[in-house]
Image 1 (cartoon, each protein chain N blue to C red):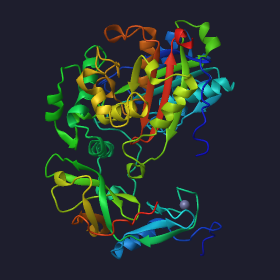
Image 2: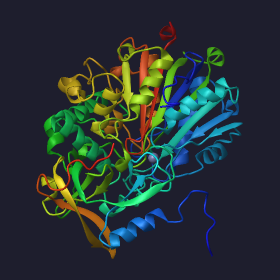
Image 3: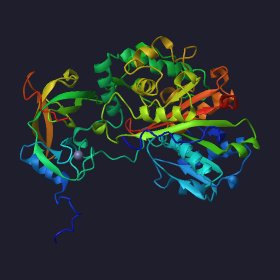
Image 4: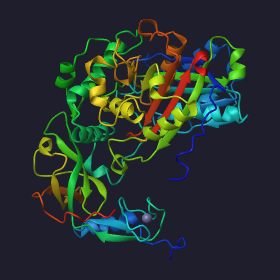
Length: 140
Length: 391
Ligand SMILES: [Zn+2]
């Protein structure tokens, strides 16, 4: 049965659209058609201006570590949890894979990759060379 | 920005706190429930005011155990409120309840408000009890809730301002020195900066000694109009001003990890009270983690942004220091049953009444009580004062 949608709203389920992108190896975010700012996590209304004309865009996948922590366990090596600022102007939580967790630093350039965890695709990041990717991609 | 710069808030001096109490704290007798502890505290706070449960017509509570907390507390205590507020915005909820109670009393919706809380999270396994569920966009990365979120904020503060782990440790050491003066504090052994740095890393840069305790405990606060307060037992402690604010729920949505919504809650509170940070004699901040204290001292205007680390160094917030902060020992060393906010109000009131014992700040007339909830999410600031502070 076709759902009855709110006026001006998309029928797309934001979380599913994002997950479908990841399954194809793409990192999707939204861009507001009213204020042109980037939006993440995906949703049906823009948190900046309240607009509802949100469109999906594919990130080029380059970003910078905004904040980072190594989470310690009773046994085994600590693992990384970081907040990544993507060049398109949105932030997401993720993990930097590759270096030991304690070597991940704020300001490190990173590049998006997909890993499968428990059968689900998950966005992760790996160190990128300094200067990799566009440097002026963020919209303000 | 519409609607964010208005002052409003409680009218200075119209509302008073007339009773505060803790329940059993620390590790309570096996079998006691969160509601038992809330009721212990409520009974003691009402008795202190010379009131009974039948005087209460406004009921305020929040709980990690009971989503409909005021229903549970009301049923248990036999209170039939005409005003019921179970607002739950995390550990700051009870400071928020104080402001909401003031608004309700000023509006004539109730006259005697009881704020009550209880938790047995230590007895229940020694881990934070929380109704929070991981956000789908954060869950795959397994941040340890909530410490990893605060660790992220600490990492950014260190990056932007050169804050050090030693400076964070100073907060834990100051809290412990205050706790050593408080017979009710859970941890009272000596603690040094070196001890903090050498303790078990949990989520870098935060060690277990940068993290609050996991204890049992409850608290209660009784609030009424200044007129009614004058007829009651004891010296009323007046609400001078208050403000609340939140900008995010999840840490990945926090706009700037070095600036909390305490910037807004604090400026609203100071504007309502007509006071400045230098007018405050004693400060109670929700120190779930050491980094909180740096952030709140900055955001509430006690020092410039980025200078919190230097501000707390050299024992400046410890006993004998320039600014007494968390004189009960805080969530780091005194008590932290999961939602600590009610205890910042209780200790602020005790200091203003001169009941601090060995930890009393001489001549304290104005106190700031600040609650934090979620992951630096909700921020609520209350300024309280003695009759002399009304000017
Ligand atoms: Zn917009």
